[in-house]
Length: 409
Image (cartoon, rainbow, N blue to C red; front, side):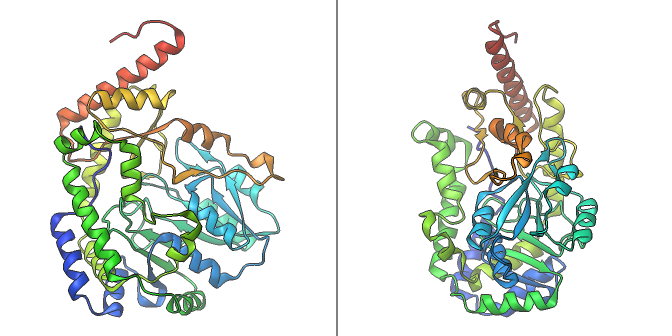
């Protein structure tokens, strides 16, 4: 069975990370290397354990009044909303245009109130959202613009869009050029960055042993991800539970999430981040983009593709929207492709109870039916064609079942 996602790390990178757990010694040098590799100087950036750690740190430094609001892309990592709420801030979602995955501009203006302090834009699924119009609204109202580039490394500008006050990049377990953890933040305001650095300096440092254990776990996953091994495993275990549990950035009970977020990246993690960003292969990202476009051309136009009209699309993941995602996934797995249903970590934020007009209905419809297809470039052209045929057939069967007529193949 073809795995749903290919972890973007080589055996040489894993070996480097393991050796770094024994030999890495200079936090400052390795952090500087990671920042510089993204075109960010020490005077405007810092490395964090994760993007969520960075957001927590940013909010701590801003010290916004309780009851403040932050306008947020309606689809985002659900922990981002939890972090906002932990700081006494109300996340206010803005529904998305399914074709581009941009926050709808008409609703953005509606979402802003006198309590609004910032706009947090998520670039989703390997695509980018143009910030020009969003930044114009933010400047008019005196709001901070924060862009979450966790899913768009290689699509977003190097070092982030300069229209954003803060840009956040992730090197988490399933991200492009993963270091199996870590994040890089660019912060435009030197005073704000200084407060964030001072706050982070009081946090404990991630244990080398914890990072070494993660590297070892992902080395094991690299073996499991071979199609023959993966297919055998699929007959024995629940793939959704296995994969989600294995790649989750902060496994464990939710009630101690903030304790786990509030740590500085270890020296070996910083060293690995620097290596991965220095050797970032734009050619492989371009190949992934081409592979995604080739698959898109083979799919029936009746199969909706969120972000098909996005400003730039690198196909970090390849989402489609199926009318019956459970049956669709079962059909693809039966054909030898581990399609993945919508994740539990990326979801839709509800509108505040007193703002029903902002309920993100389009985002809910999108995420209710989303399925991620394996579209990485290591998939041969022959397998890509078989995947498209299986997806088109699965859609035909679903639609025929809804109409009560036999499917035509």
